[in-house]
Length: 308
Image (tube, rainbow, N blue to C red):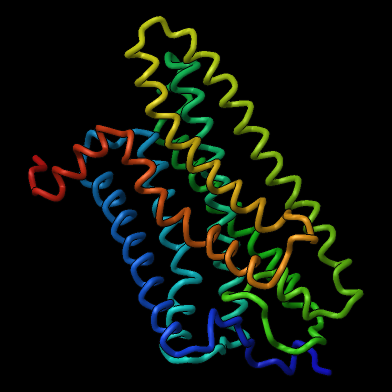
């Protein structure tokens, strides 16, 4: 028997023990990581360089891309390094840092997606008040609130998790340090300490989800009242990418954490963790640029060096 004070490292779950497959896993994850870096990096650079994109919607999109980069950089490099060097180890402090950073980025991103739904609601349902409600100072304050919410949320959960006595070894059944898997290593009566924070988490995420749903109900009602087909198309083109990103983020997270125990297994948990931790950051830039001609044009100007 051991406790958390005697644990100096954790052992992460490997995808495979076969050396050739470990190298294949490394190259596959490297490709995903480079795609995420390229896509989000292009969006960040384009929005920062193009004066025409200095609007609230693109300001929040820039913040989303920054969070996506942090989100995927928290888990992927360590997993790739472990596969490349054929090891499973992560230090105790490294594991705690990974848990903190992952929770920080994922909760800040969810908060930001909620704010972005408010941005679309004001732009379509209250266009005459858009400049007043979403001025530059208000946008900065809202973005800062999203980042601060992520920091406080991550700090509370990380401090609580790693203050629990860990009595069941140091093998984590996941390819990165994840709170549910670490809690499995704690003493049986230690989960009661997490109950209050779990209730707070449920209230926080459900509150954001309800806000997003209500916002989009109002948005779609307003869009359907737009008389011109061109006007409806333009409104939908700015809303559908955000709705697609929210749906991808929420659906993968819900299935990963709320799936019935009857269908839960070690490899299903592993696959779902890959999906919800890697797919959104890699796919979000593609989703946002697919239907946004303005962003596409600006990216092309950046690539060809035609910015004025």
